Image (tube, rainbow, N blue to C red; front, side, top):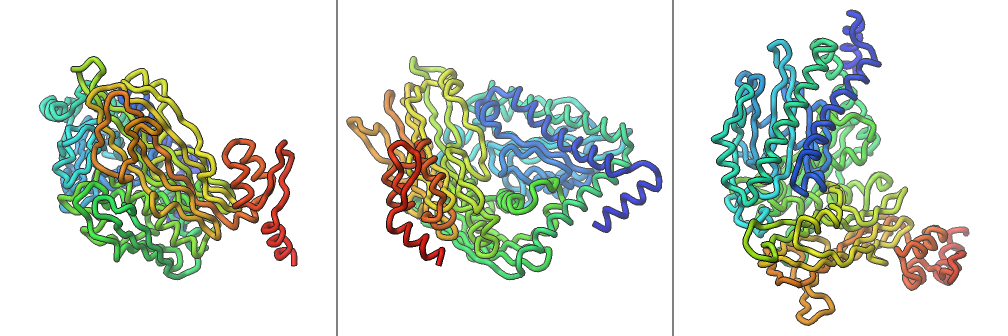
Length: 597
């Protein structure tokens, strides 16, 4: 804070910078990031962007320090900035950028590290911002492109190494001084199954950051470079101070936790993630030593994505009003052994790194539950992907791809029930409307409903998962399915019970019904007319279920979240037929009497 005060006082002496102007600058850079993302969403022709909003923008200073971000997808938090710093340090130094340049990459690996794009479908583009010939910052935008020419459509198969995951574009200039390099663009478009969609979205991405750069230039021009620089420096210092204040509230010590992934034995699992979190004063260290080595499969997390998952948790447990910028990261350090599941090294495949990243969230929350249970979240549904690639019913033509990052239940907290039917934590993607998916793809949705009784019981209930069923109408269809928590169910906190796991069923209740062996696998062939049903995992509960408020249990029954049978068995309440109230069972009455005594 002293640095910020010094800068403010110096600026005030010149009559330029005031607290009000600092707030104007804060909202201006955040608005630039949000509008950059918004333009991309409106211009996209890909359902994964226009409906699921799988893109995020960020604004940086001339050194690549984060000033503001619009992280629609939380796994993008800080990831765009990590990539920019790698580019500036190892590929294209600051002095080699010119006004109108656009630099892009989708490569996970940069200079023998995995501090770049989170996976190959995520192209990250940057453009510099110049004012009167002086470099003042950068605008960046990460966009998930639907298909980039991998071994399987959408890159969603069980890839063994990075070379299965499509064309990898190192940091290159897609445009120089405002002129697009049509040769590089042609190479990219020649390596996708959906060239029209890819061309539209890539050009929309380029236009979005150029518009953001123009807004950034206007901001510096309006208030002056020195004034805006001083205001941004003050904001970074303020965010660091406020983040450190929250960390200081956590008792010093080391807190450990262990989680498993691929716990149903799929592809050689289960594998183990470990963390030791050391809090000392206003600093916090996340040490993943002991985590299993990376595998021949796509669940390895690049270090950039691991950082993003950690940053997400820190944003959850600190003050949400703190501006998200470089200052929030300064008190944080990470030890992630190279070549482990949390720090992938070339040539590890990484497309489904979200399996590991979601588990990192539960891992860190589980460790901190020991010391700050009132700030963390019980286990959630984890990573869930449901995607179909198929040909049109009439045959021929280009393939279609549809699906979603599916919602399940979120874990409960000390203050609230977990959210029902939501893509959780570092995914947080909106559900694409059924009508929009059916209009563009050969599919008929039959059911989407809340899965009754699935949420983990507790004083605060875990969020319920969903039941989804659709009929595939296309030809030569393939299902790419991923989910977690099938054997080790989402765990509760402070006496809360676990939520239910998930399962996949093809042709449920019909001849030829089959339950898929594993929660994650390679493409599953689906015949025309087959139905796919998925029961998604739910969230863990918080606190003893026998202490849940009777009115809340009655309301859950009324809304269809909870059955009367489970209300009696788990919550110790007999709900009246007319939902006018609930009478305690002997077990609940005994607990109430003991508590009163």
